[in-house]
Image 1 (cartoon, rainbow, N blue to C red):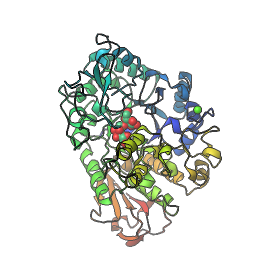
Image 2: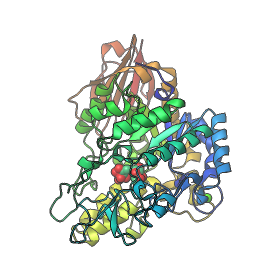
Image 3: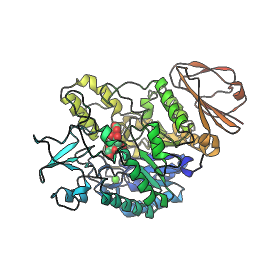
Image 4: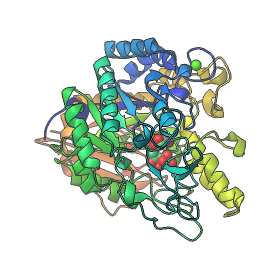
Length: 556
Ligand code: TEU
Ligand code: CA
């Protein structure tokens, strides 16, 4: 397998609005990030994935961009950005930018031109269609954030396509001018010295020419998936982007490709497919529940084992995995997959970290995950800021489809706002995130869960992550070793080995609160324990695992 720096790296995702406020207006910003680079250096990460910092009216917190070459005023200036990049590089930390080019904001200059008149030279930058005979939308597709995927525009009497919110019109990638504009913009950022791109919903940039109705359930919108996801020209576009931009720089690229299959992943991120370095697959975080994504059920261990092992095995030697439990769109890992009670929060957070960080692929840590931050105790609709949660509340509850009682546990369990509460830096007011009024409420548990306290405590979740990261740097088997699932049928334990030449590790994670037994294979009996979340002096013969116990044994 080819070696690459991004295969050996650990990435930390920053959602700037919620990371650190540098000027007291209650909103995280670039100066705030600069002030915390030393913290990230201590953690030991190699790369920052920076969620969008571009100019935006913030309909979707920066994922609706109105100028790709300007910094959002609330976040600072381009000088601040340059300083951040320089300061990060000084510390050996690279910065990967979010690239949101499936759509722009409706306040982007291109769209404001496009909607003026049909003959405008920017008209074909977006996807416009005539109404049906009765004046209704061109087809039945529903948008990701609720409602129709088409918005009627009175100026020209036509509809434009928006797979996300009405304020996020989809770009028309069929138009070579659009592609060139995007490549030029990317080149401009690369010349500035950034280190790569995380590409937002990049699997949706190519749409079929025909746009028929999608499959729909009685009374709801149709599914655009078959016509917009992994569309007919997506690989052609990415190869073109690679040839015109990516191949000219030493970058790390990762595609957000919800719904990706193994075969598609090999095309997007194959060892020699000349598209991207890796993709995010979402199967382990996107199993459908009672109301689409809205569910309060736990992900069963059997499913996780089967699913994560499939990705480990099938991409081995062919394409590169990315590893993550959460991001700015997902609930907090420890609340979702572990146990966020006072009793088991730290132990289960460490177990989850072990499980993920010993696998093959590039691990992503979402801000606050390294502290074991938890979901937020939402009380009412007014607690939500996220466009998706608010629309879901309207679509499901206010429309009368389901009772509030039934929907509420699902909503608070999956809301993206769980990930967006401010990072808990210390136990001072507002968790040290801001001296002003935070734009979104701080989780009340900041008095006990915060970075300052964890930095001081050798046994904290923070120091556990730091250790996992340093192990990856020290043992090539963690990066390049072959994965083999162990104890496949066990209902409590997720165990696997990784093997590289004469080196091997044995990873054991009790995924549950029950204690259970595991037999240490004789070849590991004298092995060295690289990391564990309990004190145990002997790893030999049959041992009884404590709740959420995790350890890694090494032998050569
Ligand atoms: O997310 C794409 C995406 O598929 C999301 O709709 C995801 O399914 C959902 O958030 C899960 O609840 C990306 C960004 O990560 C997200 O923050 C943006 O809102 C979205 O694209 C539009 O740009
Ligand atoms: Ca600020």
